[in-house]
Image (cartoon, rainbow, N blue to C red; front, side):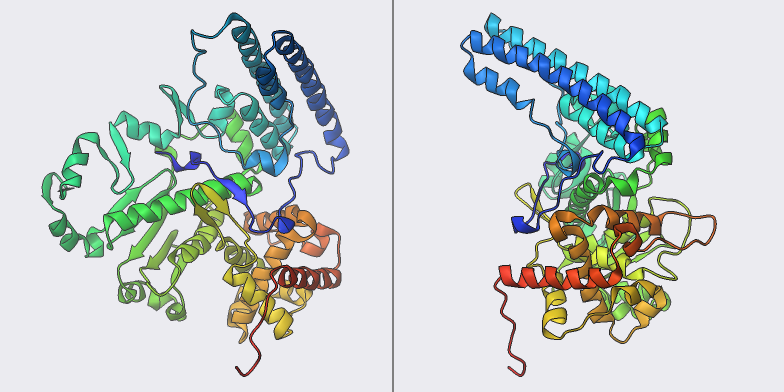
Length: 506
């Protein structure tokens, strides 16, 4: 099972705060106008061919078939396109029992989809050669939308073909080793599933009882290891818990990767992908996660280097490249996982050791991680940015009831130590969470791209110490005006939620 291909639909709890779905060429720069015109010309020709197929279907009294063809004329762009998951299987051959009329239009539709896919792929190559990474990525995703079996696009997007399925290089390796994925036990030989279900466990080269294995693996030195496409989870809680955590993190990574491609697709990275395709399984470096059975084990491992560890449920250590957690029944494990995974994923996008937000703008580092705590998946549907989430409730309470608001200009000047050592750190965390929600969703996502660009700049390695452009520069709006708009945004949320705060003293 490859979690990066689980169907995820971005769903916000309240539509009025939904995110705008910008085009790859929105606010098109003059140098991109030529490429956008080429794209429009390609699509115009594609639509013309579809119109011919629609007329054919109508003449053959195939009204429902005409609607199927017509659906391919609906443009899908921007964030909506990026959030679409790709089919897991190769498009099957047409059934033999089709009528001649139906076979004609279906063959032609497949041909036209492959043709527009190939044309858009060539456009994406021109864009990457011109240094337009973001536009090239959108064009590539458009290729896969029209022709999900385009092998070049699939390779760059991180898949390879295995039989009639599209799989990641890691999953392909597992298949070659004749392993299968089990939702309770992770990857294991197909021949072992029955014995695992019967309560046996393979420990090294011999079979022992599940109880015996549990007794051994409670010592973290012999912890269970669960490996997936992008994560390696070590835990002494249980095998099942390790698999659950790994699955949740894979779902999260898949969403994060698709929704925020700007973090991943620097011109350098994309150029390497276009030149070499998908990374091999042997080249991968999974994100490592340690999940302890008790708080005491967690504290013993990390307290020496983290004096404030006692107030945490999890922590990402950049020097270790490991995210650490413990099984806390009194806290939301999922929220903590997603918070620290955000730090881990963004930091490990680049191999260089570096400081993030050391001198300024540290609020956004924690604010984004707090915002991502609102990620939830239920029945295959993902929600993110729900205004009713606890982080945003706290942000509204601080602002609207306690009238606590650090001017954004001053917040932006705070580096890591001033932010973390501030006596009002909890209140600053709340405001940072609310601010990220504001930048993501205010006015249909007006500032969203600026926020993502700001974060990408903070995490990008630099050979010299340079000042990062602030959100006032990236949005073209003064900090003072952004402060006012933030208050408007939070007030609108409170009104729409009909929020009633407790009366002081009760």
